[in-house]
Each structure stands twice: as C-alpha cells, then as structure tokens.
Length: 185
Image 1 (tube, rainbow, N blue to C red):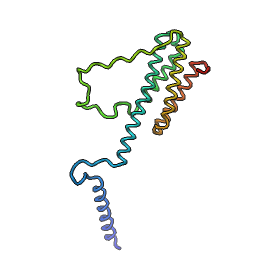
Image 2 (cartoon, helix red, strand yellow; image 1 turned 90 degrees about the vertical axis):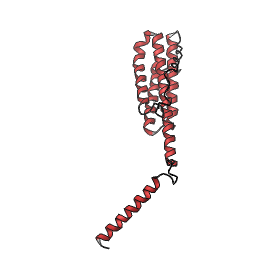
Image 3 (cartoon, rainbow, N blue to C red; image 1 turned 120 degrees about the horizontal axis):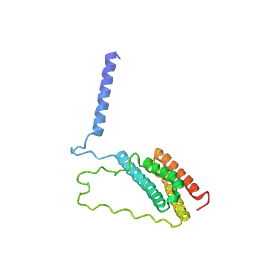
C-alpha cells in the first residue's frame, strides 16, 4: 500500500469514527433533548448523595460549635480550657463545608425565597447544665456523638472526603479525652 493509500484509509477511518461519535451524542430522532444514559444518571445520583452527606456532616459540626458557644456563655471560667477545642471545631465546620455544601441545585428566580416570606425561626437555645462539670460532660457526649456520626459516614463518602471525615472523627475523639480528663463518659 502506498503512503497516499494509507493516508486515505486513515482519513476514512477517522471520518467514520467521528460520524459514530456524533451519532452517539446527538439528540434523539424526534429533535428533543437527549435523555441521560445510565452512567450519567448514576453520576448525578452520586453527586446528590455526596452533597447530602456533606450537608449532614457540616450540620453536625455546626451543632457541636453551637454547643461549645452555649457552654462558654454559661460558664465563662471554662474559656481557657475550651477555646482551643472550639477553634478546632470551627475549623472542622469550614473544612467539611468546602466543595459543595450549598444547595444541590442553584437557586433560580422562580425558586428564590420571596422578600415577603417570614425570616426563618432562630434555632432553639442549646441547654447547658448549671454545673460546669456536668456541662463538660454534656459537651464530651456531643463530641462523641459527632465523632461517631463522622465515622459512620465514612462508608458512604468518596475517598478524599472520607479521609477528611476520619481526621475530624479522630480529632473529636481526642476532644472527648481532653474534656473528660481521660475518664469514660
């Protein structure tokens, strides 16, 4: 086969491949929009599941941060002990929220809240024990619950987020140890 013959064969093959590719991605015969295939539907489902997991993780971390704030407000004498732990939890909220904790779908004008809608109700105040030791016990229990929740979420998390959840869960376990002085709560 000559060089020209090989080129012609390559061009013909490339043209056939391009035609096949266009046929796979073009709209259906009725001219309407193309329906997503199984892989696209699965990718969309996985993205929604990850967004929900991130939202739950951030909500748990924010709840823990609110608990720290409530304990600090009720027991200012605990400030030196709790401030570094609270700062760590605030960093967890930020880290867990990066990369998609907003709404799964963008808010459009038709879905945006109206200006006449009433403001959302303020969250209920976090109950705090009057005794500082009991308040620390409550805080340790909240840390343990948040840590356990992050650990349970590992199975459903994508690899990179799972590593972050594992770190946050381990940090929470350390916080429990620091809050209880090593005692089991």
